[in-house]
Structure formats: C-alpha cells, structure tokens
Image (cartoon, rainbow, N blue to C red):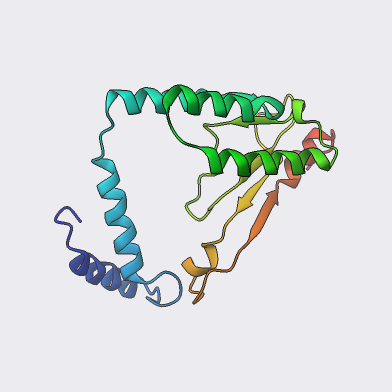
Length: 176
C-alpha cells in the first residue's frame, strides 16, 4: 500500500480473501477495497492551510437548536466566504419538512461534529437520544451507495435506522 500500487494491492487482498475462505465476489471486489484503502492513505497526507483549519474548527464548533441552525450556518458561510447557497437551501427545506410534522425545532439539535461512523452513509444522518441517557436510542440516515458496495449493479436509494430496544427499555424503567 505504501507504494500506491493498486494492482499489487488488489492481488494481495484477493489472495488474503481466498486464504481465509472469503469469496472475492461476495461483497466488495478486491479492486474496490484496494482503491478505497489507497484513497484513505492519500487523505492521511492532506494538510490544511491555517485559514482552512480555522474555518473547519469554526464549523465543527456549531451546535445549536435546529430552529437557529440555518441562520448560524449562513453566518458561518458569510464569515468564511464559503458558498453554501444550494446546501443551505436544501437544509432549510429539510428543516421546514421536519417542522411541518409538528416536531419542536427548538428541542432538536444540529451538531456539525455529528456523523454516523459508517462509510456508506451519503446524506442526512441522525440520532435520537433522551436526557439522562449517554447513548442514542435510535440512529440512521440516507445510504444511497450501500447496495452498490454490496454488489448491486446500480445505486439504489435507501434510508434506514436502528433502534436499540435495550436502551428504550432502560429509559422506560424496564429490565431489558
């Protein structure tokens, strides 16, 4: 991997998969795995300018109630001269749809640091928690690439979530 030789890395991954009994065609192809590993290695070498690093830190510090997140993000964009027009428009539409469902936007939070720790998410992600509980009760998001990573020939849009029933039971005072 250190040499960046995708062909050799693909061959190595394929041999390792066969040696451990994994089918090289059951999930992601060895060439896809090799390409992703090389992408990750390249990303490790990226260095941001001081200005870009300051903007990133400023963005990641944003944690506000959802009803004020749009304006906060717009202010961030103006102050850093980053054009987020289309993204902010989509964000506002999503926030409006959430509000239209009768959910109290002042009790929902936007946290720029938040992200689901899985590579297959491609858009909106979320967690649902409760005061006094350190772990999420539910979490999920949009994952349009997931099925192609598992072998589908074309992208298939998807949205899903998981509910941790043991945590819900604890919240309700029940024994899981």
